[in-house]
Image (cartoon, rainbow, N blue to C red; front, side, top):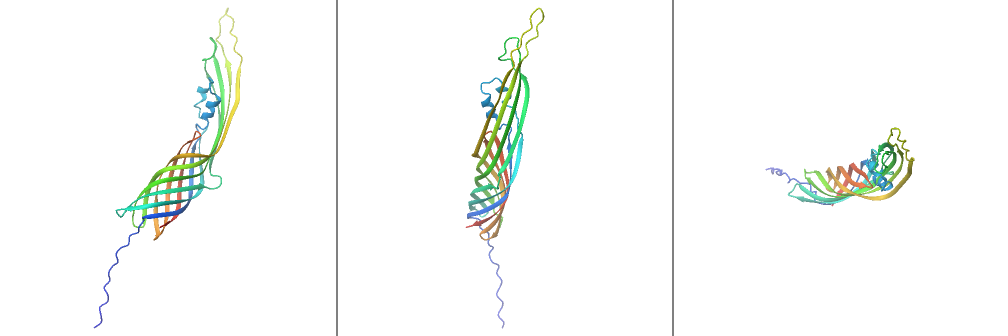
Length: 268
């Protein structure tokens, strides 16, 4: 008799393992937001230190917010620990470098106002000040790195994840401030036979300027974001990621960077 064909037995399913060390590279676009509103506040305070005009102009917001976009490239290295089959906890270091010119933005403007302050005026005299503050500022993010912890859920060959951590960046900063003001005295009007009160001479201050340039200032902050890794081969994966980095003020300039990137990694 003809022997019976062998019985088909389904193989055990093979689950993709994400555990282990990995390295990779990435490219993408980054957008930086700069708040120059108080970028020159310390310069204003320095020029007008111990000057009665100082408190009046210290909080003037002469500069707006600005945005900048640029392509980036970088690399990452990390380690995944796979728990209970589908939970990933890991640590990763990520570096991003901006292309030529960096994430650069600048702003310049001036403001003139008139106000009254009789604190140092003689009796029956009234001092009116007309002050002009002209400022400019620029900032350039050269590169930045993040060290972060991440957590994800394994969906076979998909690994969606979220992460949070600390960030360091290098920023070039230029700031400039010029201040001048005029003080005019308008005394009380007298009624005859009292003689008119002679006004004090007009007083002019400035213009006085201060300029600062700092390259490679280290900025500190935090990073957070989400992404997804997709396994292509047993040891090769592709990545799509969004990252938000918020830095502390850099010489009175507030800034943040948002990045969208694609990457390819090799898992060991």
